[in-house]
Amino acid sequence: MVDGANGFVGSHLIGALVARGDSVVALARASEEVVRRKVADALTTLHLDPDLAMKVQVRTFSLAEPDLGISPSDVFSEPCTYWHGAALITFFPRREAELHAVNVVGSSYAAATFTRHAKPGSRYVHISTAYQHGTTQGKALEQWPDYNHPSEFRNDYEHSKRVAEVQLSQTGLARNGDVLVARLGVMVGHSGTGRALSDLGLYDFLRVIALFARRTPGERVRFVCHPRAALHLAPVDGTVDRLLALAGGPLDRPVRHLVPAAAVPVTDLFATISAHLPVELVAVTAEAVEAEPFSRFEAIVNMRCKFTSPYLRHEYEFESRGDAEPPPVTPRILDLLISWYLREGLPE
Image 1 (cartoon, helix red, strand yellow):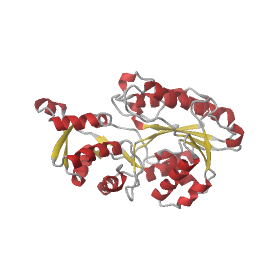
Image 2 (image 1 turned 180 degrees about the vertical axis):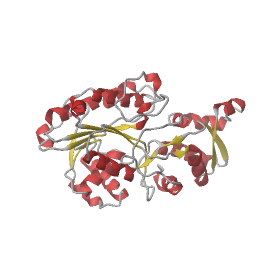
Image 3 (image 1 turned 45 degrees about the vertical axis):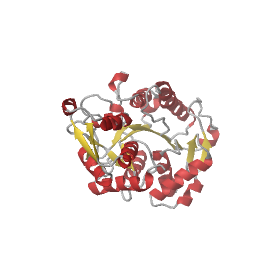
Image 4 (image 1 turned 90 degrees about the horizontal axis):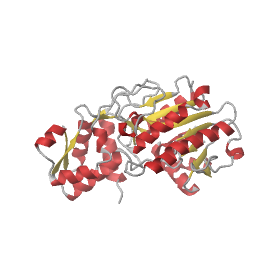
């Protein structure tokens, strides 16, 4: 069972599951037609037969209802692995109540529904983000988290994902060892082709930069960055492989970081983007901007990137182990990711 079935990770996960012969129930708010199209697209990305999407059973569900608006006897008829990945992802302000309703209360409803109705031998996988660590200094450890004040996070989304993990840690699922928390890195496209049907994270940043670069070519744009800023970009194919392996193995370590061992330096990211667009992206310190303030153009671009650029201002270190680490994004893969999106992924 996979909820959030029409999302980027959910659709690719379903594609990989049905391709290996699993019986899959996809739970989504979207229509059956939308879910099957998203899964077919994901199967194409993974170099698998898109017609396999027709084997997926689609059910409408709602995280706003205690039993998810589903028929438990229908979907919990035999032991299963329940993948909870449905979430609201937004960095916009004044969305705290919505984020709490979906990512915290909705997650608690999903776990409670599984606890009440799943057959013995079932497993529960909670998809989270490695960036629930917030702005806390030091290495993010593979352990259940403590509650932190909202001020310790870059946005309300991160805080909502932390609170959801804290609540899950207090359930019988955690006490009985029937749960896996998979904290993902920055999800990007396929490592072999760069293909990614997504507009989140890196792709939101690329969309904004491309818009300004093509309207006003030849400009320089500076961003305030940590001197050692790097992003843990995780290709979707390698991430799905790790998810399947971890969920099928022993759950003796309930919290895992699915992030590559080597992150992509922001300077490399900027250089690759600048090689494909008529713009020069430059990483600078806050002191440099204070000495030479942003131009009007730079200020506008920074304002449009204000929800993603905070991730450039920190250094991240995540505890991880080889069995959970997707293969790293090499310079060749990074070039594929950028070039594919700028060529085929940008909205019309």
